[in-house]
Length: 210
Image 1 (cartoon, helix red, strand yellow):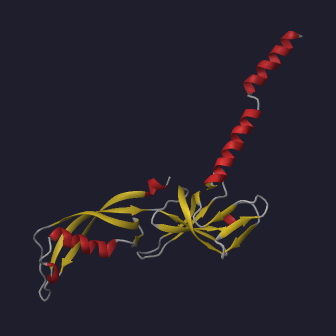
Image 2 (cartoon, helix red, strand yellow; image 1 turned 135 degrees about the vertical axis):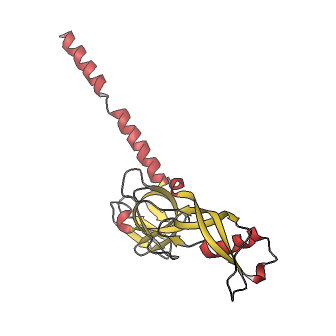
């Protein structure tokens, strides 16, 4: 599930403490600098960097001629989110467009294209924020929660943008109420279908009776 995509990564960097922050506790100053630099960015290797959790900073820094700041080596932990192909995720629809819906998974939004929702004729009503299936009557709307599989990931170079594609066109994916319906249908079919061993036993009894 989506929780598997979150992890804590340990990174190393050098921060510059400007003269204006010399009166601030060193750890707090470095934490603020790292938050501004890293939080909400995308790293090709780490994915989405969500939050700086903790930092260890060398107390003695270095100075460079002509620069009034001090430079300190830091080691810090960051909460990251890396979307993986074929992973199952939980999400909430946050926007409906002419071509599908954007689903919030973790710290970012993934595209659920109309062609990846279900095998049905779908109509997207942007004004009402709803997608309606013609034959089944099923709907998706802003606020709907669903389960989907990641089918495309493009993080590119370090930036604030990334692209994720998801699909619901597989068994037990889609809106949660659809999944409940599928499970009930599957359980009913199992109850109606005789077990193979039971069939063999009944046949053996009939043969013996002859």
